[in-house]
Each structure stands twice: as structure tokens, then as C-alpha cells.
Length: 113
Image 1: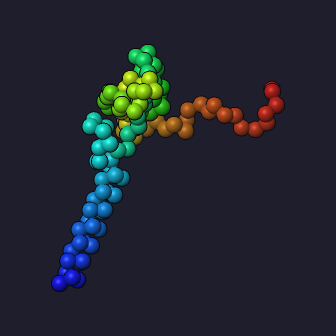
Image 2: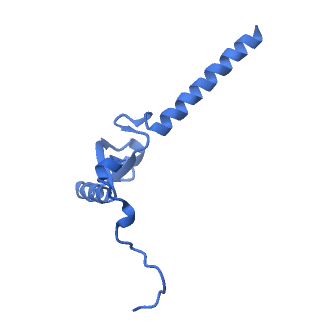
Image 3: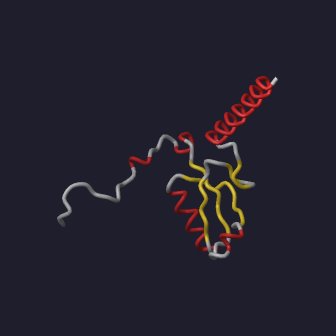
């Protein structure tokens, strides 16, 4: 009888962890109410900073999903809220890749030319 209960418990435990792992890799587990796993959080302090943060993330290939209020532990640091950002899909990018963007770091000699 012990073997049956132990086997059932083991099957349930393995099933639970399997579902949790699959959900976390697919982004189906919500981290906050309006923002699932696999998304990026962009915190801001003021409305002007909010607009600048959103534009910076858009230029990096992200799109805003939701605007949420910052948790209490972040409000003590001065953050008003955060933007939930998701990466653009290949279809949304239209085939553009980020490797073709101009590089900030130059290669080669550090001597001024």
C-alpha cells in the first residue's frame, strides 16, 4: 500500500514540475496581473522618463504591453510605475535583424585616425 501511495505522489510531483517548467519556458505563467513571464519590466520615476524609457525600448525591438503601478517596495525608491515590454517577433520585425544596426564599439586600433 505504501508503494502505491508513494508512486502516486511521485507521479503527481513529476507532473506538477513538468507543467511548471513548460509554462515558464513558454511565458504562460504570469509574473504580475498584466505581465507574463518572458517580458521585460521598464521602471520609471516621472512621466517624461516614462516616455523616454518606452522610446528607448521600442528602438531596441520591444513593444509595450501594459502600464502598471510599481509595487510598494519600489515606490520607496521613487518609482511611480513600470511598463511591461515584450520583444518583437521576427514577423513584426519584418526580417530586420539587430546585427545590421550600426555598431557603437569599433574594432581594431584604438589610435585616433
